[in-house]
Each structure stands twice: as structure tokens, then as C-alpha cells.
Image (cartoon, rainbow, N blue to C red; front, side, top):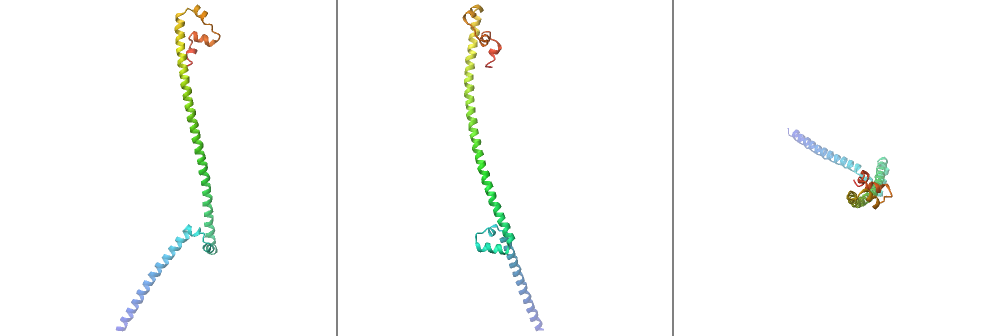
Length: 169
């Protein structure tokens, strides 16, 4: 009976060894597969400047190599497009800033003109009040002898017509 026990132990040891070997080999194969997938999808691997690696890539994986080179050229083209867009955007920003400055200067000039016009209107309204007061104190015959109007605006001012009064609001 002992020989069967030794045989059973030898078989058990054999099975344990084979089980461990299978587990280690499975893990190693899985690690190699994961590593290969990682390298395959890593852009740095395909966009390298190492000549020997490039020649291996071209020889053994020509379609993937061409695909990655096209991807690289598209990225470079996109970078140029982005740079052009950024330059145009900077130019547009400068133009907008210049227009803002111009608009601000025009706004300031308009305020100055409005202030001057306001001052002129104040003088005009004061003059109308003075004339109205004088017209009320002087007889129409004496007024005609003192003031000789040569145009229609003068007549309107003397008679205080609505047109003369509405000029400055």
C-alpha cells in the first residue's frame, strides 16, 4: 500500500507544480498582452524619432504606422489652423479695442458739444426773455423805429412766436 501513497503524493506534487506553472504562465501572458496593448495604443511609441524603431514599425506594422503618421500630420495641421485663428482673434480684439476708444472719444466730443449747445441755448433763452420784457415796455411804433428786422427770424423773435421759442426746447 505504500507504493500507491507515494504515487499519489508524486501525482499530487506534479499537479500542484503544473497548476502553479499554469497560473504563472497565464499571469505572464496576460501581462504581455496588456503591455502590448498599452504600447500599441501609446502615441509616443508611434511618433518616435528613433530610426531603428521607426524602421521596425514600418516593416512589421505598415498600416498602423501610416495611420499614426496621418494622425500626426492632422495634429500639426490643426495646430497651424489654431495659430491662425488665434492671430485673427488677436487682430479682431485690437480692432474692437480701437473702435471702443474711438467710440469713447466720440462720446466725449458729443458731451462737449452738448455742453456748449446747452450754454448757447441758455444765452438764447435769456435773450428772448430780455426782448420780451423790452417789447412789453416799448410801444410798437417805437420798437419799429428802434429795431429794423431784415430777416424772418428777427420778426419771429420780436413777436415771440412758437418757432423762436422751440429752438432750444
